[in-house]
Image (tube, rainbow, N blue to C red; front, side, top):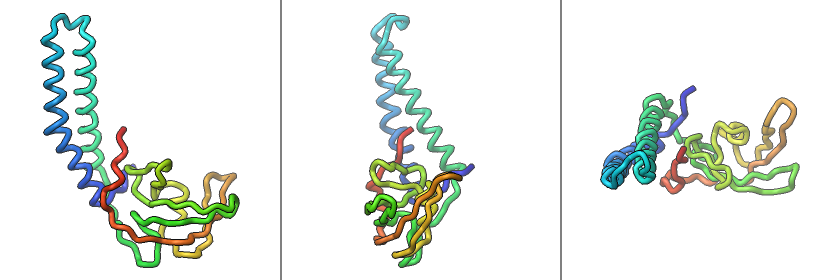
Length: 167
């Protein structure tokens, strides 16, 4: 399955790759050289820690490059009165008599604890393309779902303030 990413997601990932290649890689190589200079490698914890950090950085670079290569580019444009990617919405949960605020984003930036809901999550799928005052059924599983009402849609520009999730 391909990750659905916007052009701004791709741009942000390319910036992270460049930073990791130009800054983090250089620092990691320096740390490995310095740790190697401390002598016997068989008992040199600093050397192994520096190698682990270097390898972790290289893995992250490969991961991001693969995501970009295999990504399906999607538009973050939506009609003025419809919920779209990068929009902030207020939803009323009928079951809990509660209003919550979320921002709809692509999966790679999802962080439900920070109110960032992926368009591939049950809630994200249910509200995408809907309008204010629409009553929507959110199907979580075969046995469970709940109703929400979209109370407000705020069109927002993707400013990159929510960072990519690091794996």
